[in-house]
Length: 324
Length: 274
Image: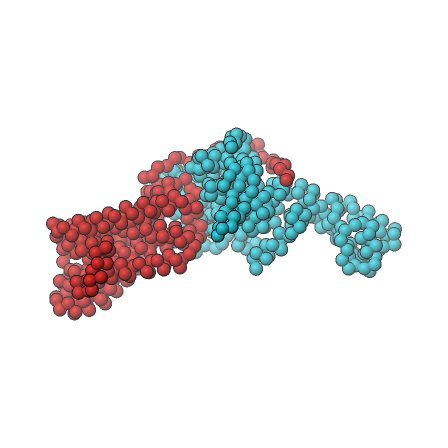
């Protein structure tokens, strides 16, 4: 099977599959994954732990050979030209890229040499990254003495030293405090804005996908189950959620019968494509029918609602369960 | 499945980022780059080399006097016999545990970073193994210098060749240690279990600390198949400045075999690493 090399695509994958065999059991980590990413896109690969996100990333970055299927990354076939892929991409894995006893600047210089850059070019580029990723204060310190957020910025600097046109980020903000996460996101968005670097990141954080990516691919059990902009996914799959509170459970039941939706005690919750328009109309109609709405809330959908609509499970709860 | 690929609006000025392609690199270039990276913490913090000298110096300082007393000979003669063994001990303990650094980097993520970098896999192993020679040579020299005031007779050409043979052995043992680390992956305990199980018998059965002539026959058989005993014998001759002795050939062969075996197994393991 051969994929045509489409020069307008940064990543193309067709029927990419990875099966692991462990203790007589086969695990389908990734099944028939099709993928097409254009230059300049910022794509978030969203899914619970174990969905196959990292396995996909490890195949695309040539760390793991696929069981079947093909992919062309940055113009190079991952099977036939893994060295070509490696020289064109930046990769930031889940762990800490910098060696713990190494100094930040030394690691950047080493990474430049690893990529075949000349000494002077490497030094200039390292200074540039230290400056843009605000690492000046820690450039001469050992990686092990850095905070989580600083380490992550060093990881990104290491991934960018050779100016790759495509950057892979595996769970970039896992384990960071809210302030460091926001700071990291700023840097990622800034990187894309100023250089047009294509960014492909995996995450199990809903807000991360929401904040960073225009395009979200939802993955579950080794398959991509949705692929669109975050706004379109929410609009199409989840819609707004309107919650109405009544004086009694009887009223709530009567309202639920009229509007549909879930009825819970004296309140009901109804999904609708456009809550802004529906809410005043419903209140008027219910009032006319003698059902008095005592409180009303209207919530825009989140990606968790999208995941819930797609799988019947909440990603938020799975995340909490995995963290526990 | 929905496969709509709604692409984000790409700012036109960035629509075609200059496809940056890192320059192709070769094995020698990559080996130098890996060696330089691995040596950097040593350059930044040279004291760390002295720090790992504690164990050989303890043996020299605490075991040495006992040996002198037990042998009934003079201090200088006993040191002439004992110091080459300590040198082999420096090489043995220094390089056999070096895989632990790789093990740590495998667990934290920096090893993965080097696997994705456009580097020759062989260079990843060889550059690391060559780096282990640096502390070995510095430590070996320091041990000898410390012994001189106590009567050890220094033969400079002998020491130079002795350190060279030890370096060849050290590259091999270091490579074997990395091979073990790559095989153990995240099982630290397995690495240290193999390390501890092998190291002390190898050390004792090499005649490094005590002569094996008085030991039972099975011990002498074990020593005969232990490459370290050939190395210890060769170092004793070399450090005394005796270049014509045939036991040197045995030591060189033992070092060369260790080196070749370590590099072959290590490069194979690194090529398979993911």
